[in-house]
Length: 169
Image (cartoon, rainbow, N blue to C red; front, side):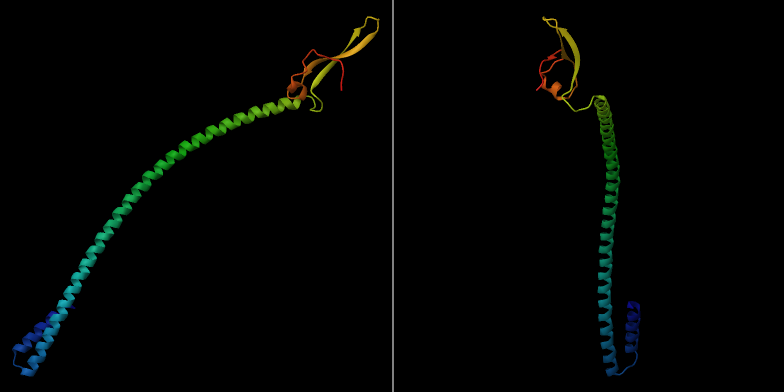
C-alpha cells in the first residue's frame, strides 16, 4: 500500500510538471499533499506495529524462559519427591513389619489364653487331700495347686500356691 501511494505521488508530480492548468495543478498538489500525509501516517503505523511486534517478541522470549525455568524446577522437584516417597515407603514398610511382629505376639498370647481353663470362677486349681485328726477321724481339705494368670485370684495376690482352703464364702 505504501509503494502504491509513493508511485501515485510520483505520477502526480510528473503530471504537474507537464503542462496543466492552474486549477489542475492546485488539485494535483492537494492530492500530493494528501498522499504524503497518508504515507507518513502509514509509516508511523508501520513503526508502531514493528515496535509492538518487537515488544511481543521480547514478552514471548520472557515467557519461554520462565517456562523452561519452571520445567527444570518441576523436573528437580519430581526427583526430590520420588526420593522422599521412597524414604516414606521404607519407613512405612518398617512400621508394617513391626506391626506384623506385634500381631504375631498378640496371636501367640491369644492362643495361650485360649488353652487356659474357662474364665468362669476365680482361677484357682485345687487338690483334695485327707488328714487324720487327733480323735482318729479323717477330714478332707483342699489345697491350692495352681493359679490361672490373669484371673482374679492371681491378680489379687492374696491366694498363693500351697494355701489350704479353710472356708469359702
